[in-house]
Image 1 (spheres, rainbow, N blue to C red):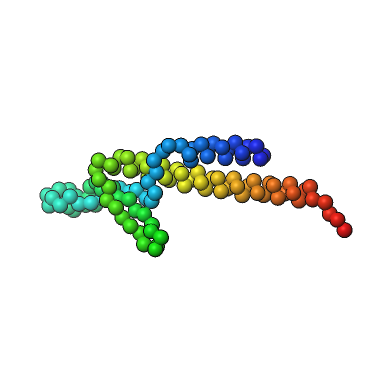
Image 2 (cartoon, rainbow, N blue to C red; image 1 turned 90 degrees about the vertical axis):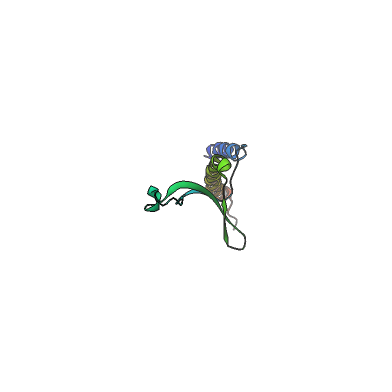
Length: 115
């Protein structure tokens, strides 16, 4: 069981240390109206046209940055990379917990009872 967890940890560490770019925060695409009164977006939800990066600051306030058109594809990929990074970190924490439980059970099994 421990060897399987070790192999899974190695796989996750390889992914985490890969050279993929990460956009720390949330990269999202929003609908906005283009401003043309005769466009279909004037009466609807708008065009899917603007990419933002939302970041939490240490003071607890959330900041929003508009992403330039030229950087949209790169930032969307980096945002996906960060989501995968966080998911992998969550899996590593779960592996840590399982390993600790196994090792503590092993210690309990090997412990001698002295009276």
